Amino acid sequence: MERWQKQLSDSVVKVKDLPFVSGSKDYMEKLEKVAEIFPIRINSYFLDQIKEENDPMWKQVVPTLEELDDFLSAEETLESDPLHEEEDMPVPELVHRYPDRVLLMLNNQCPVICRFCTRKRKIGFPGIVTRETLRQGIEYIARHPEIRDVIMSGGDPLLVPDKELERILRALREIKHLEIIRIGTRVPGTLPDRITPELCDMLKKYHPLYANLHFNHPAEITPEVEAACNRLADAGIPLGSQTVLLKGVNDDVEIMKELMHKLLKIRIKPYYLYQADMTVGTDHFRTRIEKGLEIIRGLQGHTSGMGVPYYVIDTPGGGGKVRLLPDTVVEFNDREILVRNFEGKVFRYPQPTEKTQKNTVLDPTVVPSSGKLCELA
Ligand SMILES: *Cc1c(COP(=O)(O)O)cnc(C)c1O
Image (cartoon, rainbow, N blue to C red; front, side):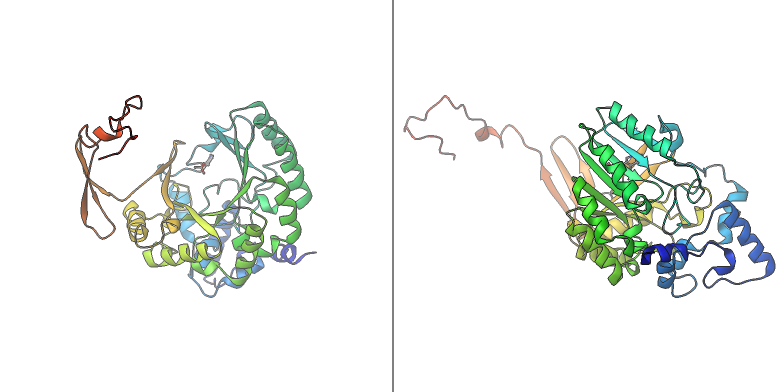
C-alpha cells in the first residue's frame, strides 16, 4: 500500500474520532445525526494539519450542529442542488450547461469531505457514479461535436486509480473534436502524496491537460503540497486554483492576499473566487456579497494582476457563473468614461471621435505629392 492509500484508509469517518470535539451525550448524538445526513471524511494527512478547534482547517472538515439546524429548518431558499445540476444532465452524471464544455463526474469520493460542499447531496455516498454512467458520459461527448472542453470532476477524479483514469483519458482522447481536458481536484492540497511521479508520467501523455486545484487558506500550502504541485507543473500541466469564500475561514483581505501570493509562488494561477452556494447544510459559511467585493478591491491593483481571481456567483437555479466587479465605473456615456483606480482616484478616458481618428484612416491609393509614403503628422 502506498503512503497516500494508507492516509486515505486511516481517515476519520466517525464522530467519536473527530479532532478537538467533545461535549454532552446529547451534543454528540446530534453530531451523529449530522454525520448520517452528511458523511465525514478527514484523511490522516489533512488531520495532521488541524492544530486546534475552530482553526481554518478544522472548520472546513469537522461537522457542527449548524449543519443540522440548517437541514431541519429547511429554509426554502436553500436547496440540496442549488445550481440545478440534475436538470442539466442529458445523461447521468454529466452536466451540459454551457455551449461548448461539459462537466463529467468520475466518482463521488473525495480525500476530505468539505462541510461547505456544493454537492453535499451526493458526495461520500456509494454507487452514484458507475462504469455505466461514465460510458454514457463519454459517448455523449463523442456524439456532440460542439463540445471542445471537458472538466473531469466528481467527487475527486484524482482518487480514481491510475489504470482506470488512464482508460478514461484514452477514451476521451479518441474523440477528435475534444480539444482540452481539465481536471478539477482538491487532491494536491489535501492528499499531496497521491500526486506520484507515476501518475504525472501517465497524465502527461494526454495533453493538452489543465488542472484546477482547490485552496481556501494559506496554511494549506505545506512543503508536501508544494512538492505535489511542482510535480504536476513539471508534467506540463497548467495549474489554476478555485477558492470558496468562507465565513470564518478566509473572509479577510490579508488572508486572501497571502493565499494568492503563496499560490503564485508554486506556479498556480488563481482562477475563481466563489461566493458560497445556497446549499442546504452550509448556510453558516455564507458571507455577504460586500465581503467578496471588498476582497477583490483589496487585491486589484494592490498586487499582481496574475494574483487576482475572478469573483463569481454560480447563480441559484442553474444560470451559470456570473462575474462580479467592485464598481470601477463612475460614469459612462457617449463621450467618455470616468473610472476609479485602486487608490480611489478618478480618471477620465475619452471615447475616440472623428477628430481624433482622422489620421488613422488613410487612403492607401493616394501617394503624397512628395513621393514619400505616408508621413503621419
Ligand atoms: C464552472 C463550470 C464549467 C466550467 O466553466 P469555466 O468558466 O469554463 O471554467 C462547466 N460546466 C459547469 C456545469 C460548471 O459549473
